Image (cartoon, rainbow, N blue to C red; front, side, top):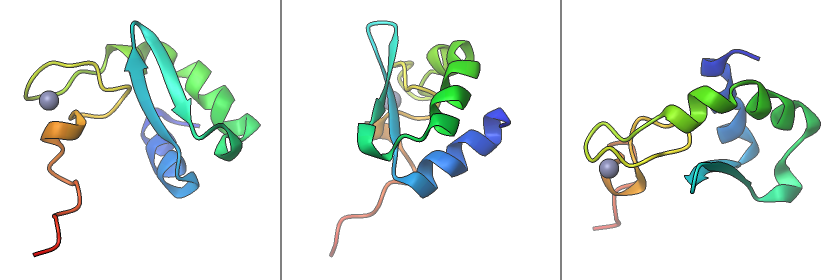
Length: 77
Ligand SMILES: [Zn+2]
């Protein structure tokens, strides 16, 4: 699985990634398949080195942290 494909697969599975103290956390665990686990392991270094473009926080592979995610759902008016 390519690095870019990984995110669409994670989103489709409802799995989120985050980096905590240099370790990747993926969950919820019951939604992780063996294929997803293998892909996360395969791209571990790239995922861990990803940083938010705005504040530089580790994001577990995404370009933005939760606070700066431009694609986050807008709150209901
Ligand atoms: Zn940020």
